[in-house]
Image (tube, rainbow, N blue to C red; front, side):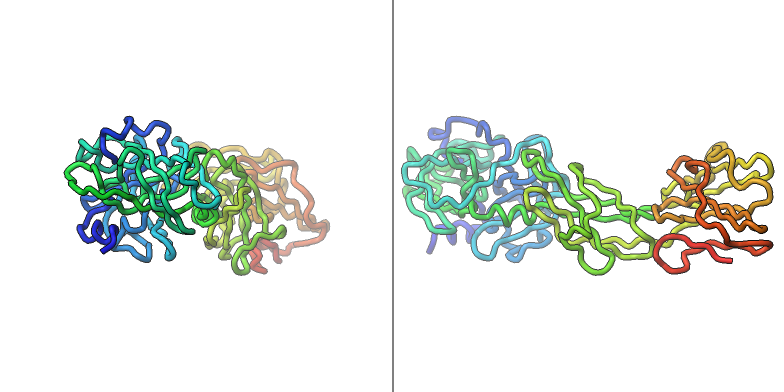
Length: 423
């Protein structure tokens, strides 16, 4: 029977003997404590919303997905709920996605597949498991190990001064001297651990130094919410050390692609407002400058309001004094009432007997105003909304439309998300 079988069959998850541990795990603030169903594991914060650990910590989720049992992650003073698990099929490794990104703790640096560590290289294993004298320590502890053997996906570790990993250390980060993570802890004989009498020694670990690309591929997840006539996008941040710039791609004709014609913006923030056309389903993809990219996510914009002057998704009211004054006043809606005293949005528009109408003529999600001179000129002027006023003096958008006593109308007649005019 293998060591791993012994430990998992006991319903336990696999800091070191106190005599061999110099103290708290200084410099390893990224070390995470994972708690589920009265059990504990360890892990490492590799991205603000991702903790790398051992898949064997979640025996009820061999294929990943939503944790079968309520699971939390604690990193420093932060405790977050695990919302989903992403497991590897080729080794004992998993990513736990948390509901609240932890942005003020430095993540463990990811490594590259540089081969099995040399036997002389000291590795540091950090975990929240038992020590030689403590059943449940109140802080993470670290111990020194060397790789006695290794393969492309696993390491056999021997503790310096006879130490071993203990229950609660499974998934804990194994870090090279340069600071990059090379493996996560697995099973052990638990030699020297509190309450154990085993004389044999040895700890197994799963290599993760070649999983940098896989981790980054999981790092960004996005959400899109149609608000008013635009779409507010947000996504999980990458580690601050990446200093990432994000490119946002959008398509209303199938999945978004990393293509120049679908690029709608770039930002260093993790939110973006896309002024999208109405009545369309948009697919989005966010790609970071370090190569990480999100899966597709979507939102459907709704039919535009002819009187949403502020662009907040609620129809407002406006009044045109016409005559010699030509004032235009707007009262915005808060969803329960039209608020406050109406505000002057334009002081010379639709004078005399001109006919004013409103609509979102440029498709930016904010309703604009148009005035029809009619008579013999047929001029049509438009003043665009910037969300707080109708800007400028009104621009001539048509020089012969709605003449004489014809009655103009506004609507999105061709379904492109921008309002048109008809008589």
